[in-house]
Length: 308
Length: 134
Image (cartoon, rainbow over all chains, first blue to last red; front, side, top):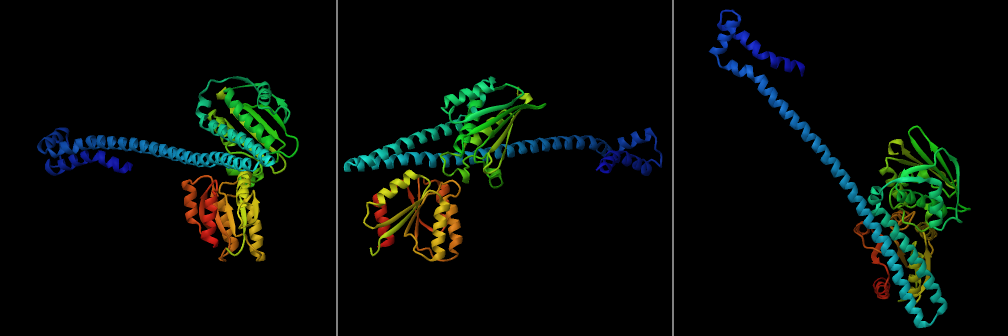
């Protein structure tokens, strides 16, 4: 390329010198050169050509680079849109399935009630009404989960505050009525508080704690370590639950609407860990998981320093 | 109808199974109802009966959205077990929502014969029996 440019730039000079050789009897002086230029207007064109063409190509090049950049941005935006669309479609699919399921269950139980009222079967009626209450309560929990999902933006935009982790955790347990159902131990506390939205903190740990309770065969307990790193604050959350088969489910664990074979007896929508990951990512944090079937699960959450 | 019918219900929703079972029990033509809360369990039972060449259920009601193995995965697995044998059971998809994704998957497969919406209605059962078993 450089040879090409050099030739392009030198060509007018070569042309004039050649011209002088042929028409000025080999006289290559400054005056002779001016004379040749005046005699033959083509030299004006040849002399100005590198400047005009150079300028033109410069502008074309700049335009192309800009175009390529905006094309790239367009492709990126398109990809984000496609991903969002797919997520919305999946969301819609599961809302329609899970919520309709709740309502359907209520319909069928109500139908059965009127059937057994007519038969005056009190035993059956008690059985059905117990199921109806259960279905409705679980339905409410499902709706709440979906609401948290759609509120994610709102959660992230709320104001942050300095949260005392141990105090807040105790409060969450009481508010959710699980203080007697799970043991929470802090075995290392390099730091005590973290700057976060209260609702975000609550959503993350309510999900983790209820998972520990739901997916557990012994008495649920959690070991939490707050570790100070050079690059940020790390929260280690280790439970004694049934664990997750990560070899089978590794790529799926933080994707929405995933439920694992070990969990088929337990109610759930499969959005909890997805929500947690989104919330942590929104704070430039990371979450990773280690788990072995039957040996509990360990989540490592890291909030980088820039955040605080 | 010459013979009474055996039903399988494969659905992780115990409430729906409770209702469908109650509904089927109202009919004279119902011989037996077996419910499975997991698709894998239903598949294991069907596979066993196919291999042992014992009596298969006449009707299988199959839910779609279930943890571990969903309805369409069940159909794929069953297709492999069958290995070109004809399935004597009639499989009916029974799900809470006729979402586009599910309808598309239903159209692609060849084992399930109808796509029903929950809740199952009395007259649907009657017309289903009339159509396939009279």
